[in-house]
Amino acid sequence: THEKQLRLFDIRLRRTELHAFGWKQESSESQSALINQAWSPDGLYITSGSADPVIHIFDIRYNVNRPSQSIRAHQKRVFGALWLQSLPLLISISSDLNIGLHTLQK
Image (spheres, rainbow, N blue to C red):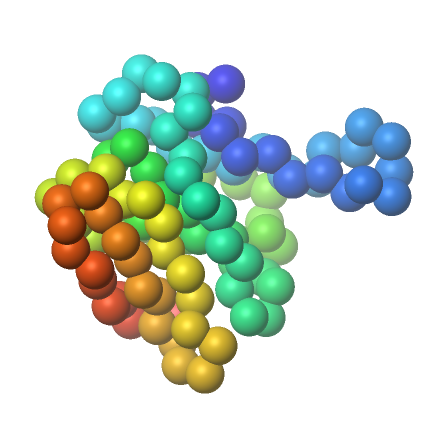
């Protein structure tokens, strides 16, 4: 659904949704605007690309319907953002044909 594009379940429990994450989309009314989710090395955050030129970061410790941080990273659709294991950096790729390196705010 809109503003709840990502749902997190505990597969050990039947039909137990832990969180529903999302955001208000700028450029698309499609409900499938989340692209290539990635877990942080510590397992507390999920990043997602989007149809908008933004990387969304969700803190799974909090059950809120919006990202804990959003980074306007590119000019076009963000295909994904991956965490570096050794440094607090994200690497992103976009349909604007650019690769980005992004530092995170704590």
